[in-house]
Amino acid sequence: MEIKVFKGDITKIKCDAIVNAANNSLLGGGGVDGAIHRAAGPELLQECRLLHGCATGEAKVTKAYHLPAQFVIHTVGPVYRDGQHHEAELLASCYQKCLEKADEYHCHHIAFPSISTGAYHYPVSQAAQIALQTIQQYQSDMIQQVDIICFDDYTYQVYIDLLKK
Image 1 (cartoon, rainbow, N blue to C red):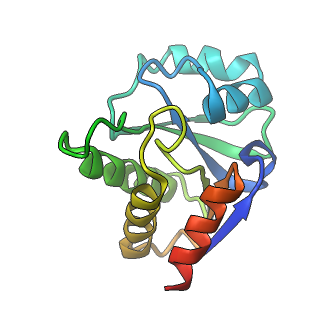
Image 2 (image 1 turned 90 degrees about the vertical axis):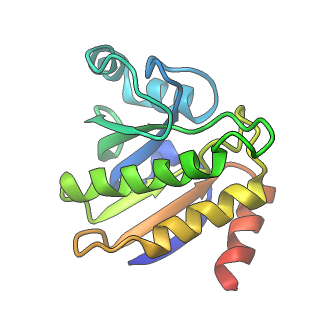
């Protein structure tokens, strides 16, 4: 599986599934979550209401509606406190569960944001290491390409530097 890193808007990525860094309600919010809900249209919110939320570290799938993807895989990353409250395990679980859902839904190409590094304050360098390690260790015959879509220059550079190692 090939991993690529881009700086840009995840709502514009043409792929089988994009990952939404959602909150526990799955009913929209700020950052990437709000952007995905706005771009997908009101049908996404209607479908999310039927899912009755999502636990931290888990993932649920909806249609993508007006997005250029087939599916949205919603995952709830941990709010970073001090690194002593299972944040790393929960963050790794987000990536793992999303990849499992991508396999289950026969996705060849999936795009992730940098989960938990915005409003949830996960340190980007630690989050990027967890993300890349989890993706690289995942075994799949289905998934061929994983994109990591970074919102800002700093996050993009951290991922690029780690991927070069």
